[in-house]
Length: 394
Image (cartoon, rainbow, N blue to C red):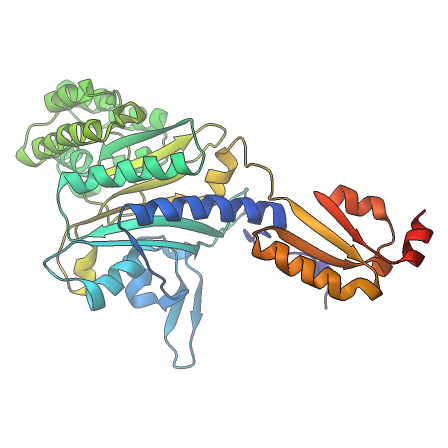
């Protein structure tokens, strides 16, 4: 074994130590419970998928995919997201035209990093997909469930930014004339490079009116008043339809009683190319990246032979944990220290207390070098020892 790699991990990989693992398990459990209360059923998919199907459908950049070959020479990928695998399962085994599917998941996904920069190559997502419902009500339900899930996890200070990729595309194509030019400008939004966006717009051979429209677009952030401002910028029918959806979404979220949690930000776009309509990002204090995101992807299932509306969201557990100011104390653990002649008694006591829900550690006192360490490690220590051990302790 090379000493260089003895304690190293592949680029972007992490160890999760006991205290963080316990906190993650607690947060995950509270979110899973809430999702189940909203009628979502959990599903698992393979860690490995075919590159030609899920790998292509995932919309993750090719250089971020972990690829390998199976024994038949097929290219496989470690799943880079969960939406595409669930779309595959839904299209092939679950979907019908009668009742929308409400599916949930909690799983690790894998995206290769060229340089680490603090970004993990493996991380856990917990999320839901609503498949077979193309209504704005379904989009509102996703946002309301995301808010409710984060509250149950203990997060108090957070905000959702809501946009519409259809509005952005229609506005840019309307002004710039081609989808290629529109994508070039959209790249600045994805990178949140607003200075670069402004400089690029000013360099384009446009009328002063169209230049001003594209610059005014960056100001479409805020409450319901954004709807009116957006309507003044767009001209064609599809763009107007997108604005109408956002207006209706505001009413839906207000009916859920959560309108104070959302702000419109029509500059939001996503590197996930399968999004087609309303999309959103979740931001919380102390974290510089979104801790969750979601949106509508009405054409993704077409890649698996079905045509239906779908929407969903995912929460990044690692970023959520980072944003939680108080992860809570670990559950108390009691240590029962016993001498050999009282071993049976110790086992029986541990069994009874475990049945009562306590966390119990059994420890032969002959293996303990420092009793003070036990007191520092455990919330309580119970001694079941004989006379010899008791005398030695005294």
